[in-house]
Length: 291
Ligand SMILES: [Zn+2]
Ligand SMILES: [Zn+2]
Image (cartoon, rainbow, N blue to C red; front, side, top):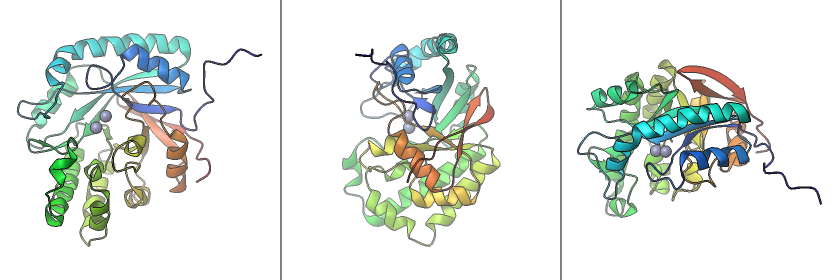
């Protein structure tokens, strides 16, 4: 019997730019995540650990304190993995998923400057002090109008995040649908929704940013790729460039559902994704496969 290969066949997308580690709420260390990425056949693997947040922005269960302490270790480990990656033919990238708070751009700017990041992923997870992606029970008592207002605020914040000039990539650009995908779809059908989203995508495009297309939504309660089809269509119309992400939190996640992701993005006419090395973008083709 032939010895079994330690590698799976190459996925149709070979660059995954969004991985977490046990420094936040991930389940594996940087080295284990790197090995998982190699096994998955990736040629570009980007770590994008969560960033410290300004005081007052906390989830009910949080990892902030430990994370703020260990950020230098995270950076040192990923920088060391760049060398190991070179030996294995894998480009390892040092990224960060940095929360955007409209009134604390100063905080984000300082964190972004603190290390030689290859890119900064802007993430919206909060509205004021409310971490909206934490507990579905928060959304249950909210009526339709209140939910619509949260969706609107999300896209206003996304536009201002893109205008801040602090970010390379916009993470999971419809995370706000996480617990209420049906209501979100209704909102998309309203007169004001798509123009608001278009405005955010135009700001993203003007800033030279990448739109993240993420398979993590398939694992979340919304069970849909981020972003959904209406937003993908708009992005394609505006010629917005994309990057791909699994938002990996465990060793099973690098390149997670990349067959589905490739078919999805390919279905909108996309044929290439982008990576960022010290802020410089370059394109990598992917195999769109069958949709
Ligand atoms: Zn996120
Ligand atoms: Zn993430």
